[in-house]
Length: 492
Image (cartoon, rainbow, N blue to C red; front, side, top):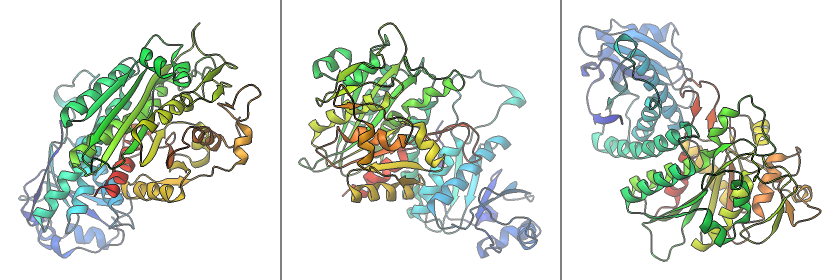
């Protein structure tokens, strides 16, 4: 159930909620707006801050009992040093929403100062992402064991009108995030290429978009030999999905978002180790991000043209699977020697990037859980960002910063192209372990000769194998925020 958030201009002491969340930066003293609330609590907040029992560090929390009137409980949440940073507000709100679920609190109040429209957007997005949970495949709990979901939030703001506008934007992006995370969390036997296609159809119907879905037969006619080589080991029908959002000038070139949609990646003949293979259901997070971003863009009613492209299949070993050493011809034309069948994402993206030409794109941005090498290079703290246009790379990095999805610019040196030379074809799909994230991006660059392009390697940021505190174990929603912020920056 979506969280309902409303703005209210009121004193914190007068809000009758079971939990009031107060977000404070590091080293703060008692804000003047909380003096009346603190008096009701017997100066508990002022004493706590004075004794430095709560310092306002990032992710720090402290519970206080409420008074006989007003908030029944108070939760202090730290913002760290970046008090005015929307990312800090989003993180704190997400943490607060998770705490509310643990406490069984269906409604809460939020105070973090004046809370203008941008702050209200950040808080709302944080609350919705923190409240999200995938429960569809669990038997509902009963009685005392049941955790109550967060349903209602009162956001205290000095300007209700401005905050309400921000809340609407936060809810729109939150819905896109929820779609992406739900798709990513679904097991591979349920979230199939056909299921991704049906989700795209629902988004198109809901928002008046044009949707096109190509199956195996249509891709054969398109001569998408690279993508189809990955799909030849599975009986599931692969899908190439396009969603067209046209709210810009009729002659304006669209932004094209591309997502890798491997609904399960066993590695194929170059099979992966069994340990941790269950996480390969997350190999479609790029595709989930594209679909979630298109949902959010439509809900925001951005004035631009955007196209979402998804290439989806599963990578399975079988008697018909592609073998190491096989050569296939891509949609663009170059022949590819398949050195490693577990380097399959780039084979899928090669044909989807080539297919993007028919939309005469202004720019193309792809996102993919592409390489373990990117995780080795950057860990889980940043997305690897590559591109053939320096200004576009900077624009994407800035969008990611605004979204709280950090990226780091990695190189595409020509030296890496040497690693991709094949003895029998135009290019090979793997250049070995050295600079693996960069050689994968170099491979993709071969298929984007006609337009500005950025590649986002989200292998380390799209999902987490441990609880992050502000987010649970599982999908994070990356790259929805970056895609949406980029589109907002380009919207007229």
